[in-house]
Length: 543
Image 1 (tube, one colour):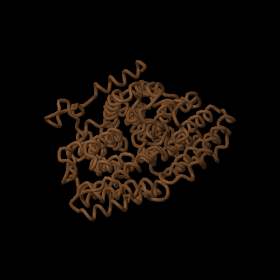
Image 2 (spheres, helix red, strand yellow):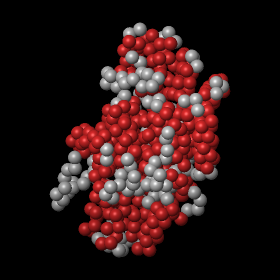
Image 3 (cartoon, rainbow, N blue to C red):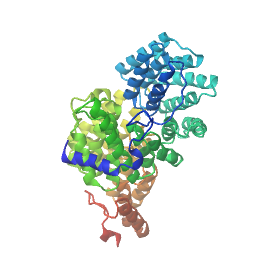
Image 4 (spheres, rainbow, N blue to C red):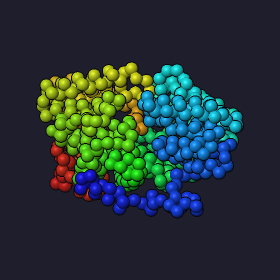
């Protein structure tokens, strides 16, 4: 690890709040873990009840590998405990993240079969096994399987109205259907899930899944304030889980609470690396990568460019991962792209490559697209038309490859990137009216979408880019309107405040300009760094 990387981890230790320190969970354990409290009666050997519930609590914090191992240990100690294999099967079904790999699907399907073969001692346990089997046995793509699971869990919850876990897993399943369906700006499914979770919260305030899934239910600009309490609670409920430590930053990001996001993700990254050091020495935890993407985003918005460089350097040093999955893929591409594009370092953006080369990029074309987006924008902004055209063509190729995929609409996300990059290419060719029209279409299209849970936000919001383009074309009033609109869906962004301040000043709106300048200075703790294209200076503020 580089010196800068070491400083990132050292800072994580320094900022780790008191509630993140492991404390006593069981008097029989000297150095206990705390994953929250769940209650799931099983018919297996009575002495295995605590171990089963520990595994289940980890599952609710998406600690999938540890949870699977814990469920397997329960089954090894009681081969008649079919519900333990239900738990194993659930760890390979990532309801919110996306489709499992072929290997994960095979392992989950085998566990579901084992659960059925072992049999269930109670009708309730049999219903849970049938529900996960509905996912693995359903025909069609991942989205259809998720819908089958949701229907099955709804029936379990109906048959067992006093079973809190059935209700909580049903809420999670509803979110899974929402994420694998076309965007619905009324967020009807998310609200339905939240209603269930709110009802359960009064009954089980220390349950990790309730707070976790509440955050996912409201991870949208319009709804985020409703999840602030859950965000503040989750890390305290399950302080031993890296994902639980990270999840509050989803809501902090939606609300522009950068200091809180930074603290959450420093602790999450450190905890994730502590885990992996014991199981995969020398590897980087995918949970740490996920946290670092959010950390990079927050550092850039607060003008802490040196610390953002530390994170980018750490990511650049990654050679292997504990699990090469989608969150890792996204962060590996997003962190260096954000670092270059947010700072308007077009040369650095143009030089992006998918790294490490050994990573299975072909599995994640939507992540690889980020690299080509950065290259396309960088080269277009440098006036390298021929090279930019090649990168835009590559984006079009990747976008086409995603059109046939069912589930989360990555194709539209990449299409937004393609249009924005192509707009900058048109700008480089002095085809300005066409550039504005295409960039506006990118912004309008992005407005119809919602981000995937894996990302803190767009690499560069399209409407913010529209503001940049209009500003370059000496249309400050129009640019100001776009910056203001962008700040609604992507709040408290450094470049949006800076762009709005500049546009307002040039439009003769000095009062508005000073307000944005003050917001930018507050965002950066009073000291605004100079970036290419520059942030507003104190001298300009005084005009």
